[in-house]
Image 1 (cartoon, rainbow, N blue to C red):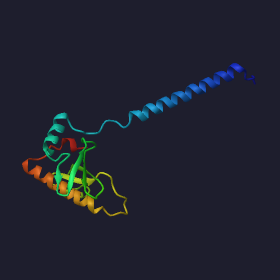
Image 2 (cartoon, rainbow, N blue to C red):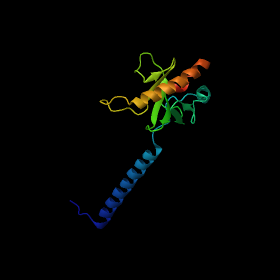
Image 3 (cartoon, helix red, strand yellow):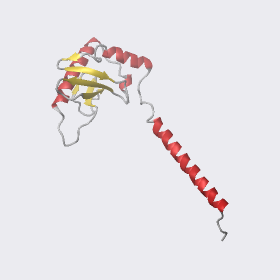
Length: 157
């Protein structure tokens, strides 16, 4: 068996260091890249039509005791609305296309379903504030539907 000399030990250490550095760089690059682009966000024209449909249901709109504080871009078949009321925690509601045989939403319109964007633990009841916020937002969206059906392209997975 050949003896390990200084050169072979140095070569092994350099190879190990290069491998470690390569793994670290690739891991960091993957972490920085994050998840892929949102699925089925719809075409630019469909997204523009969806924003036109939402119209005044935008940040700053009052919905009784609730107000809209943020509206996120369509992602994974939903638009998330953040609502706030005095003395209540913010409520994030995901607005999706209504599926007649899908899960039961907190509230719905003729075409849209409203769900909590962040689910509660399975053994916990739905917060009453979330039900009130969902009802207020659904009422505003029903009024928009009275003017015309929403474009559902960006809300399709």
